[in-house]
Length: 137
Image (cartoon, rainbow, N blue to C red; front, side, top):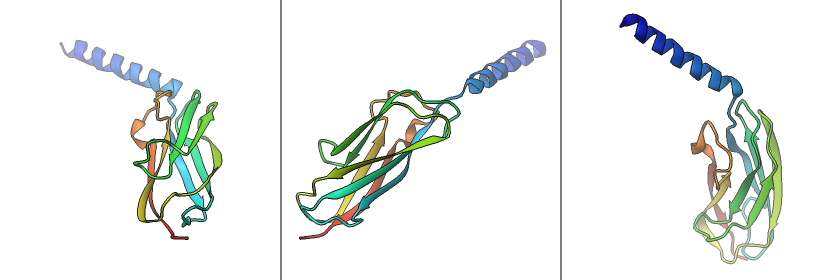
């Protein structure tokens, strides 16, 4: 029985190591900024999003989306990324025409691979949120 359990454990370890050898991507938001950092109602805002693959394998194509407010029904910026090499990243930019209202506090959101197009080692780090405010004009 001991030999069987040892053989079973050894076989399981070999399978785990073999699956890790081929690698798995892990996508996340590496940076986020708005310019101006505190937008003004009705004025254009430059959006900058960094996406990075800290996994051990290249990813396939995936989508990145930015919502001006986490509860907005539609994203304001959407990018299609053809893929990232392991330990590689990319900077994405767009211009948002402007917030329709002022806000004392608003949570903005970026989602990397929101459609789960890429199987990743960690699916829990694909959302980035930041609290901002929007000035009155």
